[in-house]
Amino acid sequence: MELLKKRILQDGRCLEGGILKVDSFINHQMDPGLMKALAVEFVRRFAAERINKVMTIEASGIAPAIMVGFLLDLPVVFAKKKRPKTMADMLSTTVHSFTKDRDYDVCISREFLTPADRVLFIDDFLAYGNAALGASRLIHAAGATLCGMGFIIEKAFQDGGRRLRERGIRVESLAIIESLDDCRIRFRE
Ligand code: 5GP
Image (tube, rainbow, N blue to C red; front, side, top):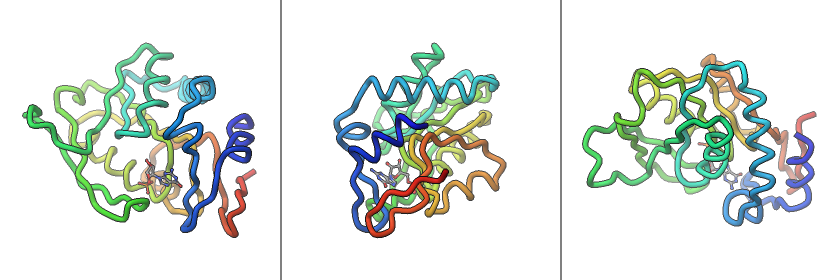
């Protein structure tokens, strides 16, 4: 998506270790106009799927997910990183975070993820795919159906895209980064 690529080149910053910082427009300060354009593109790409729920993991997936849910007029549910005391019947799984280099548990109430759900998962980044695979385990455990996964930015040099696609998951990424070597942002054409 050209608009997004332009913005990443203009405002994104490379950090050591293959990390792209986009916190001036995506995951700290946010640009709602851009977020809406991204959501319109997700809706266009997944138009043929019969989705009835949008899912993400807190925190940075919530903004794009709620825009998509708003446009499709569908509920949005996010997996939580802390187990709420009040959540009784829940599903949980462990996810490894590469940006924070630690494991964490994510959980979701069975009340909001059920066998009737046909889910579109949305997140800001696809890196090694651990968060997305954790989400797909929750969806599977709930007996729900995963219709596809949409990411704002996929880093193709970290293996997540391959891991998801080889499991037969439909993956749509709005900008695919081939490399951040030498702190230069290179997109896949
Ligand atoms: P994965 O589980 O695919 O390895 O990583 C996905 C999660 O890690 C994303 O939800 C995102 O929050 C975070 N993440 C991974 N790579 C980056 C990055 O380059 N920049 C930022 N800001 N977050 C990232």
